Image (cartoon, rainbow, N blue to C red):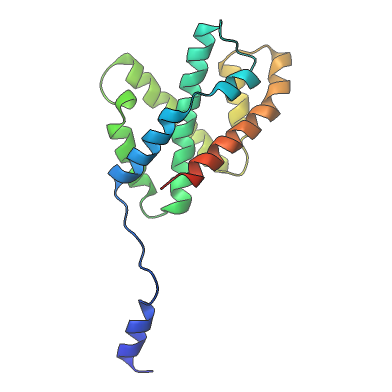
Length: 165
């Protein structure tokens, strides 16, 4: 096989489809908007009358989902994951601006991003522990909820990964 033939065969098959940070971020933002975290709140024993705890838990789960998305990006777009993630952080409405809420949400996202970066998609036990501690469940409730919650987090991650593009 000549030199020119080798070049031709190297490009046979489908070429990778380039995605932009805007496209990938928009797809994730649309998915994130569909999450109501009802199952997770139920697993934590947070009823509809616990408005403060519900709001706090939803913020925790939203920030966690963004961090989980970063892990999923790393698996599917190893060369572009950080650029896509950074673009999302700079453009997603609840993370943008100088408002106190946006600043706190960015801090939460970065906290969970660092936490999930430790084990990637290998183990969500520590993440579940942090959520139960943050929401201030009683210690007896925490132990029982931790395993269920880590499995729910796995399900969320799997959905995010499946719907990445």
